[in-house]
Length: 392
Ligand SMILES: *Cc1c(COP(=O)(O)O)cnc(C)c1O
Image (cartoon, rainbow, N blue to C red; front, side):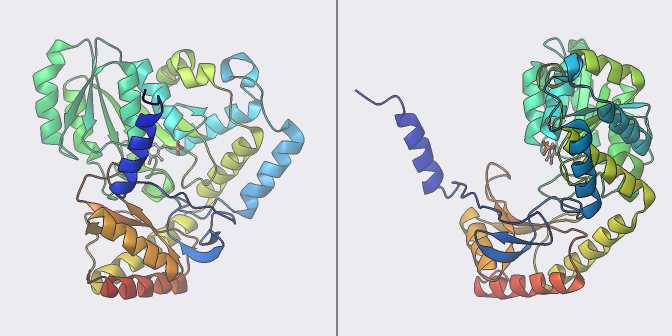
């Protein structure tokens, strides 16, 4: 008789044979420009800590104070007894920061997509989704049971074609796109997508996980395009540039009121802790006061990208601080990443299914937590490994 767990062993073996098995490293220090990873101090290019807020003294102090005042957990979902005044304060501040009427705070960006999409569309509806949308958008779409219709990446003309051909067959439609695509660092043509969606009366949603704290002086991709208040749902995360954890949904009051009634992670999973919520509030404070960190992030990103191009690396189509270093085969990308680590540089190799097959890469996340010297150190390591492996 076969063992009922055999399928698991087979799948694990396949992952290893295809070099897709993920070896999970252990962080032994806070997320910052340099970190201790598996016992070694390395220059960190892996975290989404764009503004260096994950270990920021002001956020840490806010979190500590909140614990003294509010305890460590709300011990309830938001709709029963989990809505603390802190949550409402953060929601007001996020709405103001984004220039919209209202916002709602959930446990993570992943949750935000699960919260919004199935509340907006169902079995009789359809979703127009960019080919490269993030996994959490895709899962939110699947959960909704709406028909998922994919349009070509960042292609408003193709989006229009798909909408035109299909919208008549469904009750309603939702167009959803990443704002900044996290594997390539390119930016969705939000203005054109908005125009197309409006023309056909389609609901619009943008996932701004990699735009907040980065684009539009830190206020996100909708500001970058001057479209404040236009998108029906602006989804965001407090887990990346904001340095903490949590997700947000922002838009018109009526939509947020509706989501508070319908969004399942809001109704059935406990609220975010006071410490996290207070730290998020402190992050919004910092971003509202000054664009200093955002400016530093961009100066660093431009410096690093220029350096990589001069060295002869292919950095794809990035328009943001995300720098994909295109290598092709996953084996090469993993070898490159391992050698960088030996050189004291922590940069992740990404392969299928995170990126399409044959488009494996190293992804460098630039942040405001790095100095010029750090970036020079990183460029030197890339040059050394790139030459050793015959990439440049
Ligand atoms: C990271 C990410 C999310 C998930 O956000 P979390 O707060 O980490 O759950 C959602 N969408 C995109 C595009 C992301 O990059």
